[in-house]
Picture 1 (cartoon, rainbow, N blue to C red):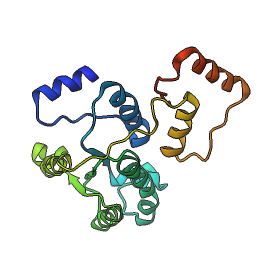
Picture 2 (cartoon, rainbow, N blue to C red):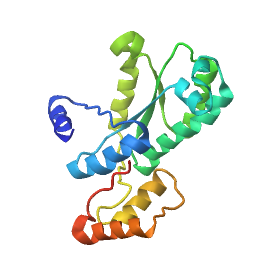
Picture 3 (spheres, rainbow, N blue to C red):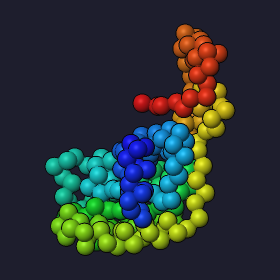
Picture 4 (cartoon, rainbow, N blue to C red):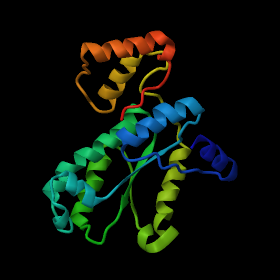
Length: 207
């Protein structure tokens, strides 16, 4: 993936990488492992979401997602807010929320989403490329280009010099908002041996 990204950067002015699902799962590994080891630094982040998925996070069954449900959307938006916070505030990357629009999305639902994201100071754009091709993503592209021109305060969640245990703690607490990390004696001894055997400088991949 590093070779692919570097090759693309030689061929285009802007390169978009799908870092994976979620700003805790995919993005954390992309940023804390791939970017750290490759020297690559992202200029902006695009967080993709749908109103349907947010309502599903809010407790709506799959067969009822086409119906307007503002209370469920309100509840599910906590998920999107966490991802935005991870990208913007934890990693310091300017970002935009791209909503893949469905025909079932209502104005009231979209207005609620716009309102919540405005409180976080993050732009929201409706993407309709599924129906309009490139034209449907043109506005998103313009916003991303604008974000790339802004200064980025990109930072890693943990330092390379941190111990393996400290790296696990920082990722768990900063990204997943865990209150603490615990392990039994056997596991702690395994981690301690890895540290003593010289593996402490490696990144930790949380799966």
